[in-house]
Image 1 (cartoon, rainbow, N blue to C red):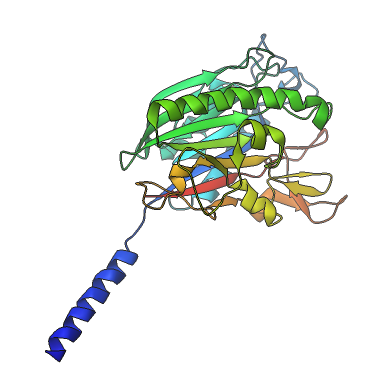
Image 2 (image 1 turned 60 degrees about the vertical axis):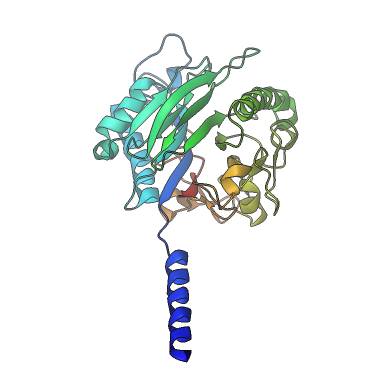
Amino acid sequence: MKTRYLYILLLFFSISVLGQNREMKNFKIVSYNVENYFDVVDDSLTSDEEYLPTGIRAWNYSKYTTKQNNIAKVLAAIGGWEAPAIVGLCEIESEKAMRDLTLYSPLKGLGYKYIHHESPDARGVDVALMYQPHQFKPIHDEIIRIPSFKTRDLLYVSGKTTNEDTLHIFVCHFPSRLGGELESEDRRVTVAEKLRQKVDSVFINSGNVNIVIMGDFNDYPSNSSITEILKAIPPTDNFQPESLYNLAYVLQSRGKGSHKFQGEWGMLDQMIVSGNLLNPQNKISTTTSDMHVFEHKFLLKPDETFLGKKPKRTYNGMAYQGGFADHLPVMLDLWY
């Protein structure tokens, strides 16, 4: 009897351990403001003269392909053995730039597809979404245009993941702080209002949904455009399925940043998720510790003014240095 009891205990323990060690599959999402990824073709409808062979930066095919290869290097380094499933990009000039990145850079063997729409931005820079077709199958995509002034469109894409769950993705690049933070705040508030309207419609139409909002918000997690208008709040212990939670709060509280301004690192680039994705019982989920800044040493250089490190950009002022961008990529791991 004692032996039989011991056997049952061991069997129960083995099943428990196997359940705990069940291998979870990773679904990685990346957001990256690549900073001025311009092709070399003049677009008569936009102000792209600065980034032409005849422009003040003498932007040419060699610099263009270096920029491509650098973006590819970053994404390959983030992915490691498994390429990121979804990549949201900011500051993309054209469909040609996306085609060249996916077909003619070192990413060409990874099979990335992309979604890109031209926006009314004065300089012609847009957002775009790259995806791995075997990990994410888009069902619907649309732009969210801001009617009151010319700026980047928001991009909304819904699609199926490998486990047949639906993800709702928003890629954003809010208006810059040019002219001053307070002077330009109304523009970011306006964009946040349009974004929130679309998010509300997704909640109404689909109920408990999996939403990821990513991009360069040109505001920090505590700014009013994010907290009051978009209503993205710090993660708590009591997640509500139809609330939005800003995972960048966690990183900012640890002194991390994706962008450096006047010596201070801050989280302009954010990952905001619906509460449903923070439910471990959901078919696909994440945690409050699954957002990261990719801060590999090859992306950084010494900050001679404020000390420490800063992003290594394509240009240092007007001097070409063949770097990467003024932002660091951020990434989010989902699990299913």
